[in-house]
Length: 90
Image (cartoon, rainbow, N blue to C red; front, side):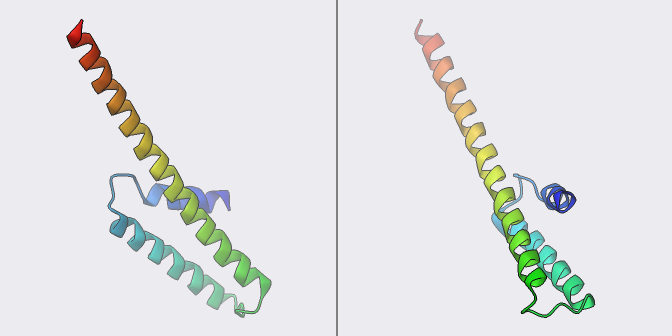
C-alpha cells in the first residue's frame, strides 16, 4: 500500500486547489472500485471494506501533509516578516 500512497501523493500537490485535488481523489476511488469489480469483490467482503478504508486513509494522510506544508510555509513567512521588522527597528 506504500506504493499506492506514494502514487496518490505524486498526483496531487499543495499548489492545487481543493477542488482539483478532490477530482484526483475521485479518479482514485473510481479506479479502486473498478479493480474491486474486476476481482468480483462483494461489498460484504472484508477485503472490499479494507481497500476502501485504506483509500480514504491515504487521502486523509495526503491532505494532512498538504495542510502541514501550508502551515509551515505560513510560519516561515511570518518569521521572515517578524525578523525584517525587527531588523528595520534596530
